[in-house]
Length: 196
Image (cartoon, rainbow, N blue to C red; front, side):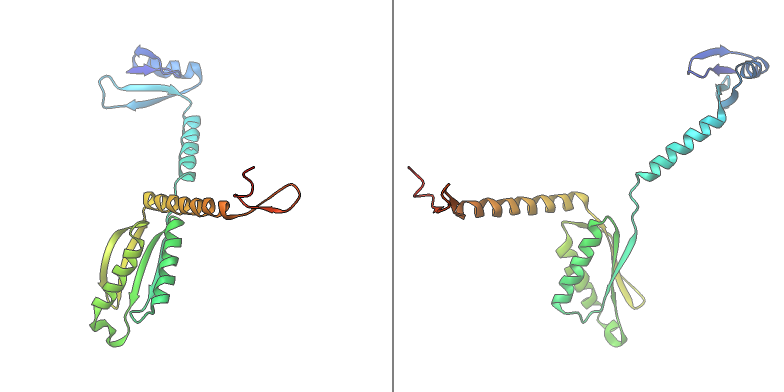
C-alpha cells in the first residue's frame, strides 16, 4: 500500500503491516484514501482531529449561505389599482430581503370562470417588477388559486439602487446652487453680487 505521511509527503509503497506499525509508532491513524487505486493509497493522520476540522469548515460554510424563504402575497381578482401598487411594493420589499415570493390570486365563486383576469393581474405585477425579479415559475392555475413564483434578480436590484442614488445626487446637486450663501456679516449674498 502507498503511504502518505502527515505533511503530505509520500513515504513509499509499504506492506500493510509495516504501515500499521508506522502509524502506531507515530501515534496517528492509518486512513485509506483511495482503495480502488493500485496499490491502494493510505494516509497517516489524526482522524478525530480531521473529522472535527471538517465539521467546523462545513458549519462555517453554512453560516455564510444565504437562507431564502418562500413568502406569499395573496390578492383577489377584484383588486383596486392602489391596492395592486401596495402589494407590488410589498413583493419588491420581500425580494430585496432575498426571499422568493409566491404571488397568488384567489378566485371565489364564479370568478374562476375568468382566469384571464388573474393572469393579467399577475402579468401586471411582474411587469412592474421585471428589473428586480425573475420568474421561477410562470402563472399557473392550481384549483381556485393562480400563482407564480418570483426570485430576486440581484443585478437588477443593484442597478435600480444605483439609478436611484444617481437621481438623488443629481437632485441634491441641482438644489445647492439655488441656495443663497451668507456673507461673514450674516447678510444673504446672491451669486451675481458676490463677483467682486
